[in-house]
Image (cartoon, rainbow, N blue to C red; front, top):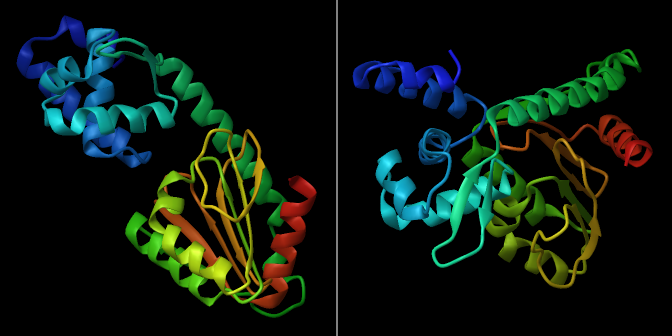
Length: 241
């Protein structure tokens, strides 16, 4: 059922459809509040933070933060003013972008197919699931960095905010830190910054000894400390960067 079809339903049916849509949006990485706010905007066509808080049933104190997060995800746009008015990016546009990103990601994965057995011995990749566990792993990797640290990705705000102190300490230890991210993303001081568009995953590389590849929403990642696989991954990033 499309968003437009919702308007043909009664209130009870609308609530059922909304809860199903919320569940589906959460599966692609949105939080509960983000899902509710986006649905609210789609149903209203536009609105202020206060308007959306009311229709989405989220706290007014959280509305601005949630809408700013949706702006970062490029799911809403904002028209300046006091108060600001927000508009949803059409669902079809978001669907097409997600499908295009997924296609590119799997094309890149196909290039890595078979690398685990290239030398005829097992090459271990550990799967980590869950945003907090992945952020914790990234923090542990940064803490162990001795000479080099690379962090790259399209949506690094959460990673950089969560690890700001650890990155600062790494710089003080003499670690060379490089961040590759989209324009306008705020990065810590004293790090090399490269601005780049159209990235599809979050990558963390430490000392040519550890590598982590995560989905942009930090819901699942792969991690390895196998030297051969890390070197292969570094080369892959270099030729596709």
